Structures are given as structure tokens and as C-alpha cells.
Image (tube, rainbow, N blue to C red):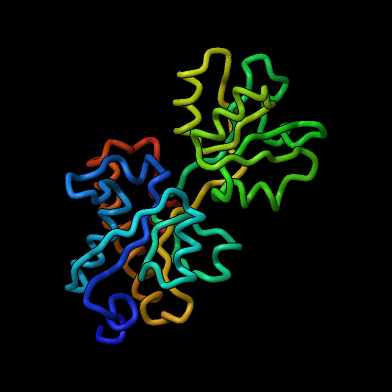
Length: 242
């Protein structure tokens, strides 16, 4: 445990990088400014087990969280595992997963996510979100048009009359409620794997985090967090670690 603490909390405080843009994992803010939600509670449980305090380092986007890791901005982070990010972050298995799909105009010809990848299709997306990184690798014909953050991508979709908005199903369902004449496409192009991460050199710390994720996803702890924060049904405990 001494080596694990030395890697994950070298100063006696677990510094946690948290993405504020995911409103399912961070659902509120405390009076002192600390984030409230599934992700902060996961980090708090790890700090409790380590016997150290916790300090939340909040960022406006997952890309900003990943960037901060290159500058020693946190000890652990909670963002989606993605190959590009894994070049500098050691990720655990996922603890929750979220479907990625599209919002389209009601009269759109697109009935499946696969059909959206067609020549001339313009897709609005939040820059450097996990699904942006996935679609950047995967799309063969459609083009991505990026905006800073989920709200800006939605505004881009509306103002420019784009063919589709890429995003997470729960958020897109809310977008559809606020914009008449739209619908969310059935199916998903990927499931976003929300995980814990630490620095690549923290081998003992990474193994410890993996063991914690395996335990907390199998013993009902994560399921309880989803219930506590009112996001069960919008998020799912990751299937690979149940």
C-alpha cells in the first residue's frame, strides 16, 4: 500500500481530474465548489480506502482533463477510455458506459447509425469528446464539424442546419425535447467507456485502481451511485466488469 499511496497521492492528498461537461457523471456542485455526482463519489471512495484526503480539479471538457495530465495536473482522472488518450494515461476497465448515437431532423432519411456515414453528411460534434475521437477514426464518408462543448455543438447543429448531431443518448434525448422536429436515431455507433486513469508510470497505482473498479462494479456500489444521483437508466454499469 505504501507504493500505491506514493504513486496516487504522493502529497497525502488524492488530486482528482473531473470533467464537468458530462452532466450524467457530475450532476451538481456543492457550496464549496466541489463537484457532486457519480464520478466525484468514485474518487472519494478511492481516497477513503487509501486513507488520504481528496482535492477535485475540475475542467470544462474531457480533452482539458487529458491535457492537464501531461502537466501533472492530477493524480487520477475520470474520463472515457480512448486510444488517443491512452497514449499518455493508464486506464482501468470502465465502471459505467453510455451509448453514442445521433440527433437528426424528424424527416431525415437516416434510420440507423450506420446510414449517417454517407457522402455529404455534416455532423456537429463536441470537440475532443470521446465520441468525436471515435468518429474521427471510424467515419469514412461523413464530415465532422466541431464546437467547444456539448451546448455549442447543439447550437451549431441548429443554426447551420446540419444533418446530424453526435452525442450521448441521454443528452440527445434532452436536446430532442427542446427542439421540435428532431429525433434520436436507434442503435449506437459505440458505447463510451467511462473509466479511471492515472499516469503511465504509476504501475502499482494503476493495478490498484483496476482492482477497485472490478470490486465496485460487481458488489453493487456503482449501481448504488447511479440510483443516488438519479441517473440509473441513463447510465449503465459497464457490462465488461459486472
